[in-house]
Length: 535
Image (cartoon, rainbow, N blue to C red; front, side):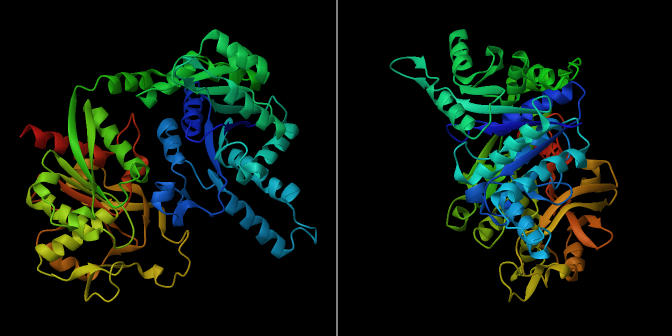
């Protein structure tokens, strides 16, 4: 049967539960086991789709169109597996499902309670992840910190799962903090001890404790944690601070963390193959060139709002042994009298990622015009395509009032309009065009050169589209529609051939990029930027 690993966190947030879960999954996969990953988020929002990027960072989208927490991006990038609707479960989803069942009468008049109804629903989601993925091992990260009111129902459900399935089928990894106190110059284990006490108070004894620490733990420190937390000393894993996060799985491998898991589950310890990952670590540690790319966004105060974009740029950089330096450009600032030559003076490429609403839009359009007119390689993602069309319509086609219905419902020349099937939509959450859709790429275009394929599948998250009424005039003036969805006749990709590299897509290629396998568009964009620097 499927085995289940649960990763919890204590003391403080931000200890790296997601990276720990992803690293363990990578190690288990490297030994030939099929691994699936899942995140429990305690917030009451049904999903992060309607949440502000300033509060929650990026919304990651799976192939099946589920809007999820950004940690799922880490999961997919580490294990290179597509996740699905069972991978991100929130309190909002759990309560919505239970209330819907209550209204239908599924509970036959019973009083609906946290235990057993909410906890049963949570357990069902754990089992569903196993059956839907047919995985050998499912790793579930529990969001938040032990002791939070919001996550108590999840922890209780996991306690019940351990009781139902036994230790041979369930394993708990608890991540804690072992701080270094300057002055006395010593590591302190008390935060870890108290965190484990809190977890035990909820009925769960951790099997492995992962300690976030600035230095390698001495044997005496591990012995102390072992004694007070009732686990074998070898089950105390240190997670030292690193500059290269891809080093973390190797650190865990050297401490035999994956072997601890397999031994508890009674599974064979197959030979591990980490050669590709070790090559990646070596590459990242020895980048011998660097280049600056300007990322023009409206949420740049929180870099996590663009985490998949940044990681995708880095992946392409690794391929060319080049460090990518991000020039974070606030698009609102570009709407002032700021000198664009000064803003972009060191940048060899400009990227405009997705976003919603009209704030900072004109600044992004100015950046796109600057890239087009100054022959700077440009990559537009989702909103970055729509604004490139608006910029071209205004400044090349002479449609000076061209805009999008998203920014001005009364605009006379909406070159970007609401999709036809979106006009009757009332609810904001979960109603965008989401997930994988096919794109037909025209031959003899830059897009085809990037992909070297005629048909591709890419993930989407948008509500507006290029208005087909304006396609003729845009094409007459030189804009190329290089990617089309044949079923709906929606524009998926555009490019401007009178330029070293100017391309934009309606989809989000950043969701499919991997550290050992960069996405074709990012790879081509970085190559063009490197070539631009050489010239």
